[in-house]
Image (cartoon, rainbow, N blue to C red):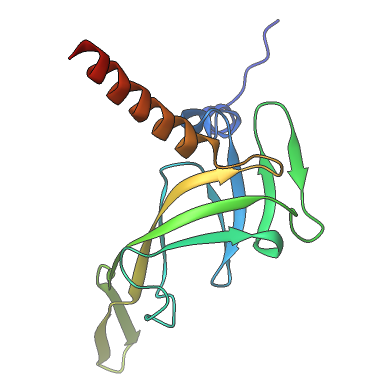
Length: 156
């Protein structure tokens, strides 16, 4: 018979599907994140703010990329994937939703309720490049724009 897989497992197999099946596991600010192209990461505030300012782009590479994969191959880093790159852009630096911290000691009429909002940085993943891949997408888009401009000139 057919192999039945739970929905969570089927979603895990499709991970990275919008990006052509390409994804990476990166180590950033003490945590590991599985990312694909156009993902939005919410991480603890990255410091120094002068370096991680809103609108700045950064390339994560070498030791901080733990695993990379596409539909054809999987690269596991020991400890990092050499030559692999992930481009991210800082979209926003803000405070997270309020988290209620409630403590109670039973039978003592003792209660304490506090709110906590952590500072977070929103990062947008721009590109995931396997080792040996260049920034072809940007070059292709630029050449396509230039070709369109030339077509318009010829038509005019």
